[in-house]
Image (cartoon, rainbow, N blue to C red):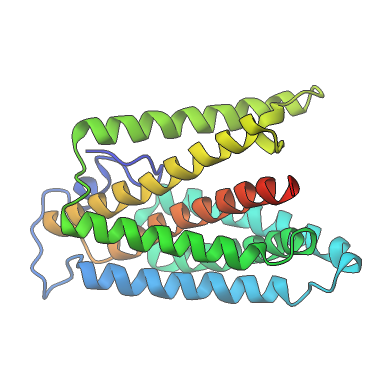
Length: 251
């Protein structure tokens, strides 16, 4: 069983539980606990984003926003790596990651908002609307996570990451894949596909968290499950921003 989210894989909760059996009263992971911690982490993302957004005052504020984007992205990446490899630290590193990622998201959102007024609220609404629809579909059984479903989403996610990595490396030599940032028909189609892939990763995350609860994973894995969900939500939000900006640039 595997998630396309690099923070969640088939051994994430099994390794954490190490074959031990926890009761719900002595520190086992619960669904309600994970939901509560996810809500807290999203609140911390908002706090970080508000800090960056408060620096937004039109074109003159761009020099101040740039360093916040870079610092938030770098700190968030380091904390994400630490959390991924030291899951027991998640109760501390996951909230810190949420704050750092909020600073990054807030500053980047301000830059997009300056060029495309109203785009941020549209992206936020679409992101959480997508999550709500997928969660309802998953909980109702309408969306079933089969082995083929997992394999397809994981393969597609890996393909997207390879495309982004190749474009990043090619950028050092003065070349890149124009469709990634371009607003051509191919560029919009690419962004739409990536949005769908990111959204489907949410379904895999829901399934992996449910498996962790059923496996009796330790309590700290609630923080880790919340961290993984926030990672996917941030990715989905950023892809929504990219897609909407391409669509608006054509008007």
